[in-house]
Length: 194
Image (cartoon, rainbow, N blue to C red; front, side, top):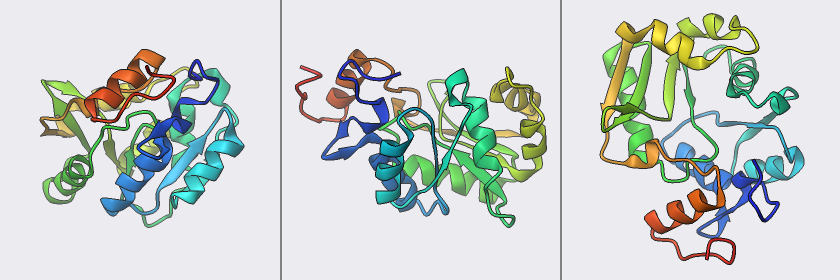
Protein backbone atom coordinates (compact mmCIF):
# COMPACT_ATOMS: atom_id res chain seq x y z
CA UNK A 1 0.00 0.00 0.00
CA UNK A 2 1.25 3.48 -0.70
CA UNK A 3 2.00 5.78 2.19
CA UNK A 4 -0.42 8.69 2.66
CA UNK A 5 2.19 10.87 0.91
CA UNK A 6 1.60 8.79 -2.24
CA UNK A 7 5.13 7.38 -2.07
CA UNK A 8 5.32 3.56 -2.11
CA UNK A 9 6.32 2.43 1.37
CA UNK A 10 9.56 0.80 0.19
CA UNK A 11 10.68 4.20 -1.15
CA UNK A 12 10.14 6.10 2.10
CA UNK A 13 13.23 7.60 3.68
CA UNK A 14 15.27 5.50 6.08
CA UNK A 15 18.29 7.43 7.27
CA UNK A 16 19.00 9.12 3.95
CA UNK A 17 18.20 6.19 1.65
CA UNK A 18 14.96 4.47 0.75
CA UNK A 19 13.73 1.56 2.86
CA UNK A 20 14.39 -0.84 -0.04
CA UNK A 21 17.96 0.40 -0.46
CA UNK A 22 18.54 0.04 3.27
CA UNK A 23 17.25 -3.56 3.33
CA UNK A 24 19.30 -4.50 0.25
CA UNK A 25 22.41 -3.06 1.90
CA UNK A 26 21.77 -5.21 4.99
CA UNK A 27 21.41 -8.33 2.85
CA UNK A 28 24.58 -7.56 0.92
CA UNK A 29 26.46 -6.88 4.17
CA UNK A 30 25.44 -10.38 5.30
CA UNK A 31 26.91 -11.80 2.04
CA UNK A 32 23.55 -12.65 0.44
CA UNK A 33 24.31 -13.07 -3.27
CA UNK A 34 22.53 -12.50 -5.50
CA UNK A 35 20.00 -10.11 -3.98
CA UNK A 36 16.89 -10.15 -6.15
CA UNK A 37 14.25 -7.47 -5.63
CA UNK A 38 10.76 -8.22 -6.88
CA UNK A 39 8.81 -5.18 -8.03
CA UNK A 40 5.10 -4.58 -8.33
CA UNK A 41 3.48 -1.17 -8.00
CA UNK A 42 5.69 1.77 -9.03
CA UNK A 43 8.02 -0.77 -10.63
CA UNK A 44 10.28 1.71 -12.40
CA UNK A 45 10.96 3.86 -9.34
CA UNK A 46 11.49 0.84 -7.10
CA UNK A 47 13.74 -0.75 -9.73
CA UNK A 48 15.94 2.35 -9.84
CA UNK A 49 16.41 2.31 -6.05
CA UNK A 50 16.97 -1.45 -5.89
CA UNK A 51 19.50 -1.44 -8.73
CA UNK A 52 21.32 1.51 -7.16
CA UNK A 53 21.73 -0.63 -4.03
CA UNK A 54 23.13 -3.54 -6.04
CA UNK A 55 20.11 -5.81 -6.46
CA UNK A 56 19.00 -7.64 -9.58
CA UNK A 57 15.39 -6.65 -10.25
CA UNK A 58 12.52 -8.80 -11.49
CA UNK A 59 9.02 -7.49 -12.09
CA UNK A 60 6.05 -9.51 -10.84
CA UNK A 61 3.22 -8.86 -13.30
CA UNK A 62 0.74 -10.50 -10.89
CA UNK A 63 1.52 -8.12 -7.99
CA UNK A 64 -1.95 -6.53 -8.10
CA UNK A 65 -3.49 -9.68 -6.67
CA UNK A 66 -1.87 -8.61 -3.42
CA UNK A 67 -0.49 -11.99 -2.47
CA UNK A 68 3.16 -12.36 -1.57
CA UNK A 69 3.24 -15.85 -3.09
CA UNK A 70 3.31 -14.60 -6.69
CA UNK A 71 6.37 -12.48 -5.88
CA UNK A 72 8.11 -15.41 -4.20
CA UNK A 73 7.45 -17.56 -7.26
CA UNK A 74 8.80 -14.84 -9.58
CA UNK A 75 11.99 -14.75 -7.51
CA UNK A 76 12.43 -18.53 -7.37
CA UNK A 77 12.22 -18.76 -11.15
CA UNK A 78 15.25 -16.52 -11.67
CA UNK A 79 17.60 -17.90 -9.02
CA UNK A 80 20.86 -19.36 -10.29
CA UNK A 81 20.87 -23.13 -10.77
CA UNK A 82 23.60 -23.57 -8.18
CA UNK A 83 21.62 -21.82 -5.41
CA UNK A 84 21.06 -24.16 -2.47
CA UNK A 85 18.49 -22.00 -0.71
CA UNK A 86 16.55 -18.76 -0.90
CA UNK A 87 16.33 -16.14 1.83
CA UNK A 88 13.02 -14.29 1.70
CA UNK A 89 13.23 -10.82 3.19
CA UNK A 90 10.33 -8.38 3.14
CA UNK A 91 10.77 -4.99 1.54
CA UNK A 92 8.98 -3.22 4.38
CA UNK A 93 10.88 -4.45 7.44
CA UNK A 94 13.64 -1.85 7.80
CA UNK A 95 14.68 -2.84 11.32
CA UNK A 96 15.94 -6.31 10.48
CA UNK A 97 19.65 -6.54 11.19
CA UNK A 98 22.66 -7.89 9.37
CA UNK A 99 23.38 -9.98 12.46
CA UNK A 100 19.97 -11.66 12.30
CA UNK A 101 20.36 -12.34 8.57
CA UNK A 102 23.81 -13.83 9.13
CA UNK A 103 22.58 -15.98 12.02
CA UNK A 104 19.74 -17.40 9.89
CA UNK A 105 22.21 -18.27 7.11
CA UNK A 106 24.70 -19.82 9.54
CA UNK A 107 21.95 -21.91 11.17
CA UNK A 108 21.06 -23.27 7.73
CA UNK A 109 24.67 -23.99 6.80
CA UNK A 110 25.44 -25.78 10.06
CA UNK A 111 22.14 -27.34 11.06
CA UNK A 112 20.67 -29.18 8.09
CA UNK A 113 17.10 -27.82 8.45
CA UNK A 114 15.04 -27.21 5.30
CA UNK A 115 13.61 -24.00 6.77
CA UNK A 116 15.27 -21.50 9.08
CA UNK A 117 13.47 -18.48 10.53
CA UNK A 118 14.13 -15.94 13.23
CA UNK A 119 11.88 -16.07 16.28
CA UNK A 120 11.06 -13.25 18.66
CA UNK A 121 8.95 -14.00 21.74
CA UNK A 122 7.96 -17.37 20.23
CA UNK A 123 6.70 -15.75 17.01
CA UNK A 124 8.17 -16.59 13.60
CA UNK A 125 9.48 -13.60 11.68
CA UNK A 126 11.46 -12.74 8.56
CA UNK A 127 13.76 -13.24 6.79
CA UNK A 128 12.96 -16.91 6.22
CA UNK A 129 15.41 -19.25 4.51
CA UNK A 130 14.05 -22.12 2.40
CA UNK A 131 16.09 -25.01 1.02
CA UNK A 132 15.91 -25.77 -2.70
CA UNK A 133 14.16 -29.07 -1.88
CA UNK A 134 11.00 -27.04 -1.11
CA UNK A 135 10.95 -24.86 -4.21
CA UNK A 136 8.91 -27.19 -6.44
CA UNK A 137 6.31 -27.46 -3.67
CA UNK A 138 6.16 -23.66 -3.41
CA UNK A 139 5.91 -23.21 -7.18
CA UNK A 140 3.05 -25.76 -7.26
CA UNK A 141 0.93 -23.82 -4.75
CA UNK A 142 -2.31 -22.43 -6.23
CA UNK A 143 -2.60 -18.70 -6.97
CA UNK A 144 -4.55 -18.14 -3.77
CA UNK A 145 -2.12 -20.26 -1.75
CA UNK A 146 0.27 -19.06 0.91
CA UNK A 147 3.90 -19.81 1.70
CA UNK A 148 2.94 -20.71 5.27
CA UNK A 149 1.22 -23.84 3.88
CA UNK A 150 4.62 -25.23 2.88
CA UNK A 151 6.31 -23.95 6.04
CA UNK A 152 3.65 -25.50 8.27
CA UNK A 153 3.86 -28.81 6.36
CA UNK A 154 7.57 -29.01 7.18
CA UNK A 155 7.46 -27.93 10.81
CA UNK A 156 9.61 -30.93 11.75
CA UNK A 157 12.35 -29.70 9.39
CA UNK A 158 12.31 -26.11 10.65
CA UNK A 159 14.94 -24.47 12.81
CA UNK A 160 14.43 -21.22 14.68
CA UNK A 161 17.04 -18.63 15.51
CA UNK A 162 15.92 -16.90 18.69
CA UNK A 163 16.56 -13.16 18.45
CA UNK A 164 16.02 -10.28 20.85
CA UNK A 165 15.05 -8.01 17.96
CA UNK A 166 11.36 -7.38 17.28
CA UNK A 167 12.31 -5.94 13.87
CA UNK A 168 11.83 -9.46 12.48
CA UNK A 169 8.09 -9.08 13.16
CA UNK A 170 7.40 -5.42 12.44
CA UNK A 171 6.67 -4.00 9.03
CA UNK A 172 5.64 -0.65 7.63
CA UNK A 173 2.05 -0.94 6.41
CA UNK A 174 0.66 2.40 7.57
CA UNK A 175 1.94 5.92 8.25
CA UNK A 176 1.67 5.12 11.97
CA UNK A 177 3.83 2.01 11.49
CA UNK A 178 6.40 4.10 9.61
CA UNK A 179 6.53 6.71 12.38
CA UNK A 180 6.80 4.03 15.08
CA UNK A 181 9.55 2.12 13.27
CA UNK A 182 11.55 5.31 12.73
CA UNK A 183 11.24 6.10 16.43
CA UNK A 184 12.28 2.57 17.45
CA UNK A 185 15.30 2.86 15.15
CA UNK A 186 16.28 6.20 16.67
CA UNK A 187 15.59 8.11 13.45
CA UNK A 188 14.11 11.59 13.66
CA UNK A 189 10.49 12.14 12.63
CA UNK A 190 10.00 13.23 9.03
CA UNK A 191 7.40 15.71 7.85
CA UNK A 192 5.15 12.78 7.05
CA UNK A 193 5.68 11.05 10.42
CA UNK A 194 5.43 14.06 12.71
